[in-house]
Structures are given as C-alpha cells and as structure tokens.
Amino acid sequence: MRGTRPFHAQRYSRGAIFFHWTIALLVLVNLWIGLVGGSMGVHKAVGITVLVLTAGRIAWRIANPPPPLPAFVAGWERLAASWTHRLFYILLVVLPLSGWAMASGAKRYPLDWFGLFPIPYLPITPAVAGAGHEVHEVVGFLMAGLVALHVGAALRHQFLLRDGIVSRMLPGGRRAR
Image (cartoon, rainbow, N blue to C red):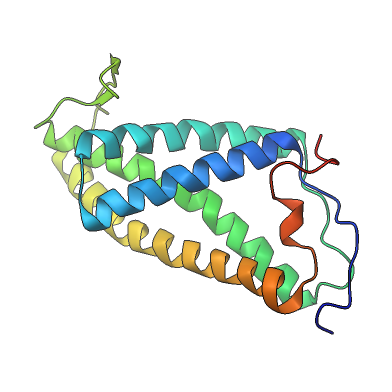
C-alpha cells in the first residue's frame, strides 16, 4: 500500500540524528578522497574523526535505544535494516582502524589530526600493516556499496512508499529529544 500509511513516526533522538548525519557526511568525504583523490592528510584525519564519533555513536545507541520500526514494516525489511545497521557499525570501526594500521606501517608521512596534534602510530608489524592495506581497500568498497544500498532504501521509503520512515532521522523535528 503506497503512501497510505501516514503516521507520526517515533523519531530518533537529537544525539542519534547528530551522529548519523555528521558521520554520513564524513564518510562521503572520505569515500570521495579515497576513490577520486585528494589530500591523504585530510583523509586520515577524517578517518580518525569517524572512528571517535563512531565510538560515541555506539555509546549513545546503548544508552538511548532507537525507536522501534512501525508495525507495518515487513519482516524482511526489519531484518534487512537490522543487518544493514550492524554492518555499518562494523565497517565504521574496521575501515578507520585498517587505515590507521596501513599508515602506521608506512610511516612515510606524519599522522596528525588536521595539523593540530600528532596521532601516534600503532605498534604493528609490516605484515599487519600490509593486511591493513588489503582490508582497507576491500572494506572501502563495501562501505561505498552499503551507503548506496542505504540511500536507495531511504529514497524508496521517501518517494515510492511515502511511509514516513525517513522523517524519523531528519534533523529539525519537534519530537527529537
């Protein structure tokens, strides 16, 4: 039933919305730099920022569980949403850590946070750094694919189903706490 389910969505908290959109923007920036090119110094600093924000997001999610999906959401969609979000959290940790490992093995360039302070290299072996490089490349492409899937699902809910699901995560709503 397309567009026949107008409901008042139970919204995510303001904190969850902040983490979602901030991390989403930073991930898009880093995907662009990683795939198209740009400053590796910025790429590394953004990656470290994503790692720190993801730790905050996970802590926030534990303390502030997300609102349940509306009853009309099909079982397969619930399962897909649940696993997509789990995979996002895994990738949001593995991608920056593998990049940090890769940078720690190379040590060709200083590792710092936007030139403000140094980031220590991880104490790893060359073999671990090499594995970090391989993991970083594969997980980067997985992240790009997962972002495309997530955006596609959001567009489907917003424009095809018109079911109000997307409004739960949009900034500026009255019910966000």
